[in-house]
Amino acid sequence: MNTFYGNGSATSKAPSAVNSNNFGLGLIGASQFNLVEKNKLGGNINGVYLGPGGNVSGNIIRRNIILGNPNAEAVREFGVTIGADIQDLSTPGANTFENNRCLTYAGSVQPSPCPSISKRDDEEEGQERDIAAFSRKRLTFPQARLVNAVFHASGRPIPKAAGSETPRQTAASESVTVTGKVVDAACFMLHAAAATAASHKDCSAACLARGVPLAIATDNGILYFPADGNERLKSLLNARVRAAGTVVEKHDPMELKMPVGDKNQMVVRVEGGYKQITIQTLEKILPTKRPA
Amino acid sequence: MNQSLHNRMVQVALAFSALLLWAGRTSATEISGPISTTLTIMDDSELVGDVTCTVPMTMPGANPCISFGADHIRLRLNGHTITGPVTPPTGCSLPPDSMYGVGIAAIDRIDVKIDGPGIVQHFERWGILVGLTGHPSSGVTVKKVTANHNCWSGMQAFSTSESTFEENVLASDAGGSNGASCGGT
Image (cartoon, rainbow over all chains, first blue to last red; front, side, top):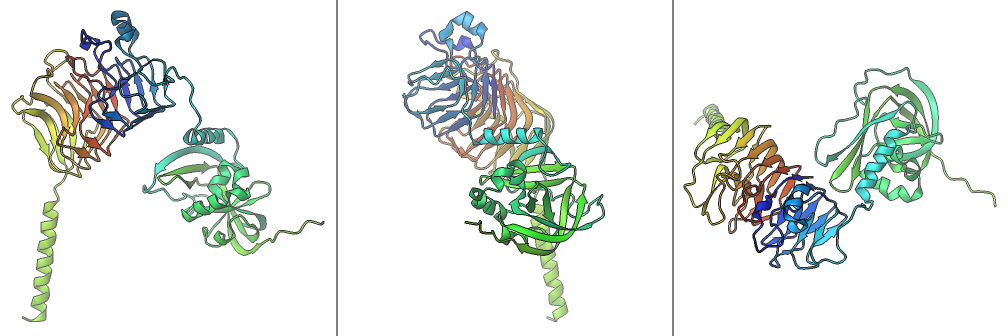
């Protein structure tokens, strides 16, 4: 996101020109196939300016906030035609405007891209909303809470789970038998229902291939993370299993990473402790036939 | 030649080669203070203090304060400011002028980066110039840079492709464009 504020001087208006040619962001001359996305432009003579001549084409201008161009003082001094949020002198249809927030448009595109004050939901906004919602509600395993969720570009080192190697605090272990479903833990924490749905199988397999931690989710929503990683559980993804072993309560923070598209990862940091199981026996529970 | 001597010669040769390789890698150039002739950077460079530019208009075209002279290098501004000699609209370049001043130029370059935070301000034409007609640039990244109070555009790109301009602030530019079509970027 770039920010463009207060650019352009109205005094540059040529006597023969209807509009000033100054701008916050300008595509002029031969400007083709650019993506102008998620910028803020305000108080400029024109917010976005697409120049004439037929060589400004193939550009996509989307999801920008383009408001207050020109500023009220310039309008009062020079009249409303001095500028616009989007000043479009390019060939109609040569460029694409999508989901911008703007009020004034000067150009030939019909329907006019402005005024537009609503934004359509998209995938990224949905993710942000999910994260926000996730932070508001209690996690499905006890005591834990989401303290941060951020996007990291792929290729950057992601810190390992802080509690996985050198726990500062570990409660005494106890022998238990756990029954539940093998799930993609990161997804389960965001969308418990979706993570356990059959339709999520391909997605969780893709996540597994990229190293997302697996866990056993019990019917009451408690997650048990295997002490030895995904090795023993990976062939049982989405299956119901019964695991016996010793369980310890970890109290250090833990980070789960989940791929988002090809380029990003979402890292969910969890504090408040989690359960780790050292599996001694593991068996798949076959589905039982319902009585006819 | 006995084996011991041969081994020793090989070791000396390897050590000399390593020394040459090491010597070929210069550390990042540190920049600060006044600049009165164009500083052309050939390797990764960084500002370690504010810069004041007084590069005279002696060459046709851009007379940049700092110019990228090599591909695949990076200029880090480290929170410092590069200030040119004018305050718009006074002293600004006129459209017919063949010689003009800019802050940072990346012309005919591939894969170069300008990393903010940092400010580029008060130049006669553009704060940052990427590419020029007939001298294309590609793979240029400009990130977290503020360009303000430059006479023409804060950042101007000509013949530029596959580049990323991200998280920049372009404010109060084009106060002295004298009819040229200019603005933030």
